[in-house]
Image (tube, rainbow, N blue to C red; front, side, top):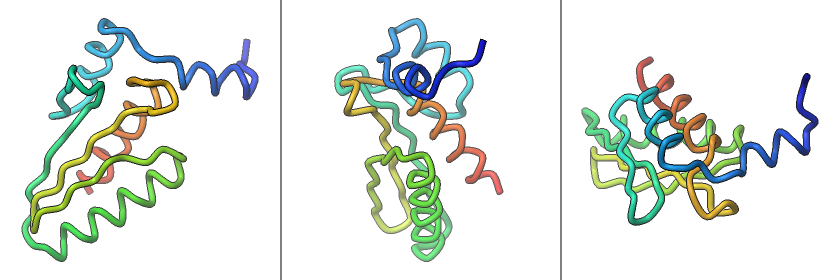
Length: 108
């Protein structure tokens, strides 16, 4: 049975428990669970400042398309991304879905 749009939205905004978070992290490459702040985080070191800026723009496009906006930190060639669902006060499927999209984009 297919979920209605409202059911799908509430499913996406339901905070995940620790078991679900651990299972979802296993599907990601290099993301870390910040338990004290209820975020997942990943860092990249890119080959140039220009490459880092292009990376941020691409992440922004993915985030906008998903209507889910990460915390981004850029220090020259180092990029840090943190994801959490503020509306749910924790981690949800939206965070892990966007992390997968970011990882997929980063491999190209």
